[in-house]
Image 1 (cartoon, chains in turn brown, cyan):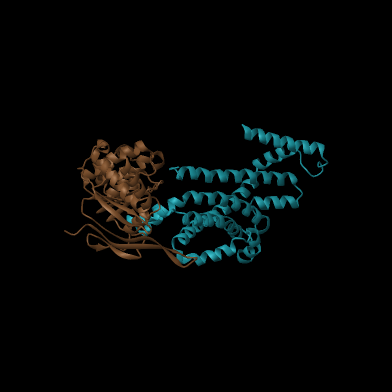
Image 2 (cartoon, rainbow over the protein chains, first blue to last red):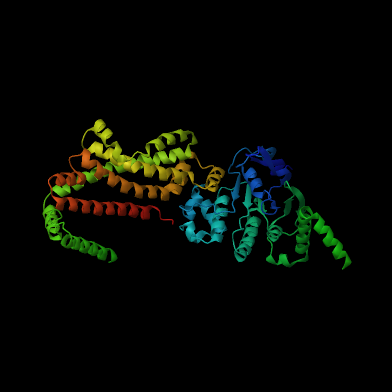
Length: 262
Length: 240
């Protein structure tokens, strides 16, 4: 079975105008996502995660490589893949209802999606009177209203406080269990990635490439208690090792040597 | 209450200047002003002049708003029209008053000339604010629109226009002030009715009382025009 999302050898460089040289950000990124799979891309700030999202969304064209969604090469943004952004991306001059109605006129679908994310009671509200968490829910509901094949979440919870983030993780996991929507979460939060994903792709290096991939064997929907489990800690340890190995290889060797004496 | 106190204070200063300084021979007293005001309010002359000025401002301001907003949005949306902005920017520094001789040559004395000057006074601030407001639309809104495949017409009317609306109102508020100043300036030279003409005529007739009352009316009407635009802003921009 061919994967729903097929990313092949993507590279991207920002051109430095003054020196007429290019600055390679992404190098030979290749991965696949199966239909109904929840995959996270994990990497530190500034490693090119958002650039990758912009390429997947069709806002940027990759310098090299191809992206196929349902075996179709992507050339421009489209309703088959919707991004929920880190920044506030809902239109402040439209009510919750109008934000969703702009993209889909079907009232029943709007009501269903609003109910799914818990916005049924605030349909007439303007986004400015909603909390940060509610705005994220609206952004998610607006994405679901068009029923995209592929959902891209670009650090959607980065600007929220810990408690709100925790609450939304649970809701997103439940939502994913219900909709089985193929999802790519881009994050720098290790716990978030482990808690939500079926698979984690770790980015790092200079230029950024894929360091490792890790399958997460917890079934959906997940309890928050898994974060205290031994398996969860093991996943975290493995991610940290892959990540630090790429960033500070010498330091990690020293640490391992020191630990071996203890 | 504070505003009322300030007006009383201004009147007191006027009275003090009248009594203490040697202005009596050409400056009317407050009582004389009040008597002239009553006389004016009882007649029709002042109402006709106010109506003439308001009609000109209405025509000029509405035309300037429609054209300024439309062009501002179009130039921001279609990058191919950027050259047009260059020509607008060339005309922008020319003060509306400098156009009066041209307006008289083109349209003669009267409503059309004065409305043309009003149009020029209001158009540039409205256009400039609209254009810079529209080009400041966050890239995220453009990205979201393209992802959801929002068509050009809907993007223009539902997204770009509403994003720009607060900037448009900033332009309209500046524009209504410059339009009002322009109509008075135009009427001083290029019209035979209106508050500007009323002041000019009474200056020649040495009726300083009517000149001062005309000036006061200009201030009061200008204030209310500004308030009307501000009221419309609060009614249309409800999401803030």
